[in-house]
Length: 435
Ligand code: EPZ
Image (cartoon, rainbow, N blue to C red; front, side):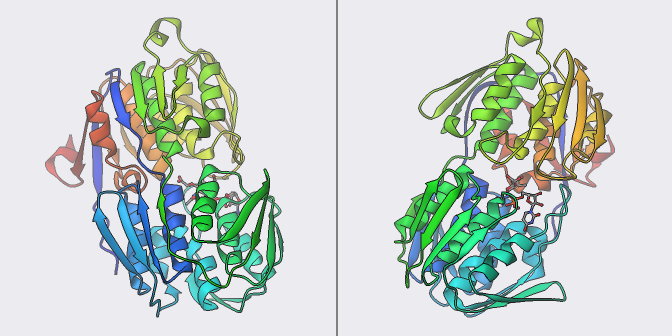
């Protein structure tokens, strides 16, 4: 049974412009798929620059429950050896803690010809069905039945054409993982173009897989009978990097990000530019200077999320906090998830002027001076964004549900404290929560 989640909260004193240097951690959304990909071989795989976050712990625990050996020799380094996977069952507990456990469908089915895996269900940002993943496995010849919340999948996979009705990141990743050991050629279209997908492709190729992006939205795979172990350094986390750029923007601060993937943040940096936030890119650094924006203010900016290379839906919440500082109305069109604007109600508690018009549209009017309040985190990215709002706000905020943020941000409060922020984490129910 998974450990009970420690209910913790953040206490934030706002009003301090952030300044200094912060190192960006490895990508959560690349690491989870890379760790799962190691199941495609019985040989040892080594990953470095893996973020030390709760979701990685869940994936490691889930792999160990399958009988996979996972060593953790150093900070950010994991070695995976899936020699004896004798238990091809991914239980509800894993899926309940982390949807991404469903990425194990492809590699387990492709390598062992059978797997029972829990339907991960939805979360606070949307219904999030996995029917497209299941259809992709069926297109590769698998037989899949659904009973009592579980998918029962079996069959020897063969190459095929996978055409998705919409772009799906993990659907694309599950398809190429499965196709890597299938007999024959597979074409995936429209294939997600997220940098995390290309990081997975790079690792698969290092394992000896024949997988290639043959057009921006097309990936072709020729299955192999066996793959070998390999080593891989995970790409930096563009969503964490974007979150820190937004932190500088909302506090009128000045930051230098090191180990930052500027080339993966094109659409976001373009939005920051339209707002009036200066962002400059180095080889693997990002400099953002918002110190002059207190006088000149920010321009309103309509934003629309979409599949890469459009603006990432995971950067919609942090960008919304920046929009509260703009002079005028900014329209938000969230095209990916149908419940990802609901968190704005918590921002309104802090004094924002935000109206959710329907499941995919909202308007934020500014400039509004945010003020400290007691708010509740519903999901990972909204959580990080409420911290940003509290850092920009006057007074003190208490942010409940800190565990959500630990799922995807490594040591976020320590990183902020090193940039001058006044933030601390405390256990719910301790005397401080009464303040
Ligand atoms: C990945 O989720 C990321 N998660 C998400 O990040 C990210 O928001 C999302 O891609 C979009 O960029 C991980 O990589 C672990 P999708 P994924 O399949 O793959 C619908 C974060 O905060 N859909 O691309 O699950 C779906 O409901 C997380 O780090 C179906 O309808 O997203 C959504 O509307 C949140 N049927 C759209 O497609 C399916 O079978 C895109 O979702 C699959 C998806």
